[in-house]
Image 1 (cartoon, rainbow, N blue to C red):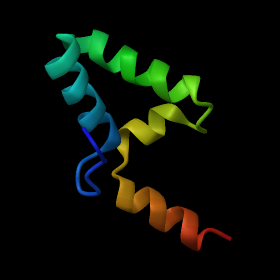
Image 2: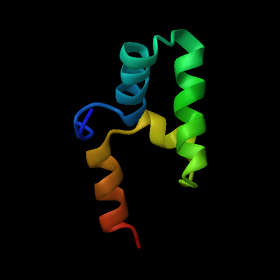
Image 3: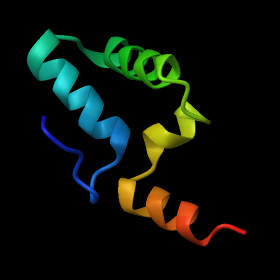
Image 4: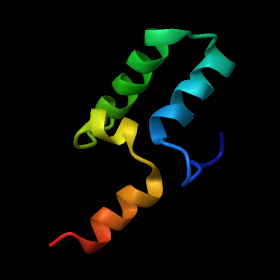
Length: 64
């Protein structure tokens, strides 16, 4: 993966990559993705897993 697709959720793209390249399945893929998001100190990693990038960007741009 070179970049995230703004249409798909971040979580879907991460777990798909872990399945293809690391052979991880099911909850193991999700745990690996959560660990990665937590490791880089992103706020609310669980929420990020469920959002698509475009929505996340728009929320950041228009938040007051």
